[in-house]
Structures are given as structure tokens and as C-alpha cells.
Image: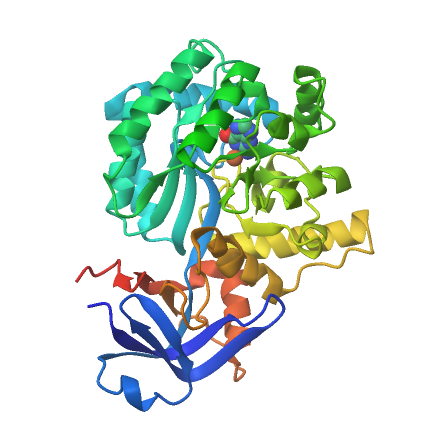
Length: 427
Ligand code: GUN
Ligand code: FE
């Protein structure tokens, strides 16, 4: 049943800067689409079933715009390393295990079990370079109720003996086979082209991916300007490029507004790189937990937002240590405060409202009208029980919401709806 009303304490961003709240409000879902949030239930919806969550918070579902499924089981390990050492010592050896389908089945079951119970209703996910394991991940994801894009990773250089495809040609052939296998197979799980990053992909491979994206209108995700050594390496690998983003542009992999590319990190993206991201309608996946763990730096998110670039939040597990989007909202605020204090006092920290926006509608817009309770949006909603977080004050809904992000362990998810479907209790 995808037409109903839920009642509770509703909060969502009306704009990037402002959260609208309704204490004891009604949120209407008709055929999976939000028909608005109301103080008093309009007459026309009186006949719909009312599900009563009085006293609980109702917020939009969250979009994790960048997460690595095969890294989930080693999260929180190797965190004293910087990016390139962390990849070589921990990530690549772990991902090589996914050539074994039984290993992949088990490890991905841990990831999908936790994703299903997380605050995320949408996710954009990296798998590994292994086709069978990637299809297995997609099969498992389809059952979580979460709507996702999933990428079989392309990498034909610098992965070491066990995590490198034989050639650009083989990598592209395998990608074609994978696309054939998953085409039309799912209702909620979609393929996305995933060249790992420039150091992992030869020029020939990057060109092939650019071509495939254009021919089949397939979206692309990758990494951009995460770490100083990585940025310098890319300049060596693509000497004709004017910046890292231009290297992607040269290979026709930056996408466009209708087929937007997601770039994770952008810690070192300057004005020139921002112009390229903006011109192509790209999305930046801001992963501040990861950027702190790997000593990468702090991305100037306010600058990106002010420039009109699309921004969402990614957890970037396992460089980020958790898939928890409430924690990611908090980390983004804290990182922006340190950028303001230590780097540039003309760049004001993110407000709570702005960070909440990035996690909901900011990243949600990658999937269409997603991440808000404005009329016409897809009905992705979370019912959060904060009743065990005691207070001696009478709190507003806005205050309760803020403190759930600062104390995520004390919050229980009671229901999770995606496109109006209750994913915890399938009808
Ligand atoms: N750059 C290339 N691969 C990766 C990865 O797996 N994680 C992170 N954080 N950055 C990358
Ligand atoms: Fe990543």
C-alpha cells in the first residue's frame, strides 16, 4: 500500500538554509509520491490510513553519494596511513579477495544487512573489478529496498599483481558483459561506470569509458583531488592536463547536467577545477570523515555551494569508518569549522541546516526529486525514535533533530520508507 499518512514531528529543508518543522504534523504519501506536510490533514486525504508515530521524528531519507561496499568489513583499520599507502597496504589486497565469489557473498551480506538498517535510502556504490561479485552485490542490494547505483570498478594499472585488469581492452569487454547481465534485471539497482581514479586507469581505458558513457547514456563516478601526492601523480600521468578535473575532461568522462558524473572528495579543487565541475553539472561527494582519517585535508564545501556546484555527502567507507549518515552530517559541520578557523576566515562554517540539506536533498537530487517532503518528491522517509535521549528542557523539533546528529547512537530507526514502500516491513 503506497498511499497513506504518517503522523509525527516532521522536519525537512524548505531551502538550503532553512528547516521547516511541524510538531504533530501529517505527511501524506500517494502512490509513492509526497503530497506535502500539514499541520491539519486536508479533507481530500481523510480516507487514507494514518500511521501514528506521535512523539517521533520524521525526516527525509538520506543519500550516501559515495561508499565502497567491499571495504566495509575492514573499516577502521589502517587509519594512520595516507591515501596511496592505505590503498596499497589495505584496500587493494582486500578487494583482491572478491575474485572469490563465496568470499564476496559473505562479505557483501554484512554490508547489505547494515545498509538496510542505516539512515540511507539511496546510495551510490563502488564494487570491485570482479564481474560475478559485482552482480552478487547488486542482487543483494535489490533486496534491501534501498535505491542504488553500483559500479564494477575499472582499473588496468597500478593495482599490483592481484588487482589489475589485463588491459584496457579486457576491462572494457568485462564491463560490457557486466552491463549485459544487469540490464533490466532490477527495479532499484542501476549500473554506473566506475573508473577508480586516473592513476588506476590507462589513457586507452579512460577513453573507452568516456565513449561507452556517451553511447549508452551511462553515468560515471570516480575520485578527484583527494590527496596532494595523488594530485601530483596525476599531473605526471596526464602531463597535457591543466588540472586533475581537466584530465577527466580530456577523456570525456566529466558528464553533463543530464548524465552527471560524481566526483568524490575535491579537497584540492581550486577555482579552475570548480569551473570544470560546474560546467559539466558534476556532483561533488563530500567525505569529511574519510578526509580526516587519511589526513587528506578539508574540502571547501561552502565555496562549492556558493559557486552553484551540486554537492552531496558520502561516507566513503572504509576510508570513512562508518556508513552512518547522521555522523557524516556532523563531520561535515566540524570539518567546515576547522577550515574557517585554520584555513580561511572568509569561508563561513556550514550551519546545521546546510549540512542536513546536503545529506538529504543535496545528494538526493542526483536521483531526481528526492530528499525533501515538498509536494511531488518521491516519498523517502525515516521515522526516528529519540525518546531515550532524555532532556530537562522542552525541546523544539529543530533542537531534537540537531542533537540526533550529535548523538546518533541514541537514536533508533523505527521505519524506513523508499518511494512509499516500507522497507523494514514489506507489504
Ligand atoms: N582513490 C582511489 N581509490 C580510492 C578508494 O578506494 N578510497 C578512497 N578514499 N580514495 C580512492
Ligand atoms: Fe572513495
